[in-house]
Length: 271
Ligand SMILES: [Zn+2]
Image (cartoon, rainbow, N blue to C red; front, side, top):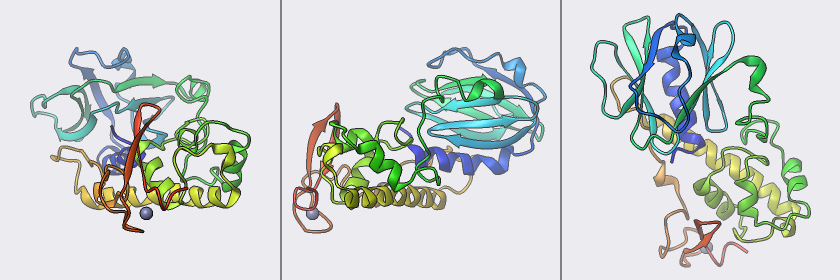
């Protein structure tokens, strides 16, 4: 599943190809995504002014009013192809642009979704109204994290994966950040001390920023390529490393089930 870094790398990769372009027309190929498609006529003739990201949503900001909002779901990806090129494999949506290229959305499992949301409806929209701060923004501070943990009985891993606390921290990056800050994933959030939370705050930003940098350097171009930045697995220190030696202490990385997901940790380094 694409996590925040993959979505951010997609955003950066697409920008040079769609910025300032007009959408000649948009269409889907009839296979439903997770939610009904927007009325594509609303995009016709509109200029793409920007691509922004909020949590794991890509926001295509259009001249006039409104944004085309896209969530990649489990397997969604964008690619840029010449407009006269035939429908790509697993292509669901095509936006024809005014430079002879088109933006194709391909999604094997079709858990992704798109909607057109006007500016006035955006902040109160149910997909966005309850979202916490962006992890890499100034709004996400150590004191915010400390305040959010106070008195909480849920695990610290559960808390940092709660989008009301901070957005875009999925299983992989939560595991990595907890390892780097020496906190056991099952610790009660309310029992984690301020110093450890300050380390966790820094580690969350660090792992996400590193993954974005790694992704940005591994993809060359969204034109022609499959548009899939992939996971930056070379950087993982605990995630997916059950039974392998800890990079810090040489102990054995362990795995357990937590909230239905796998948690990886080092029993010596994380307490
Ligand atoms: Zn260790």
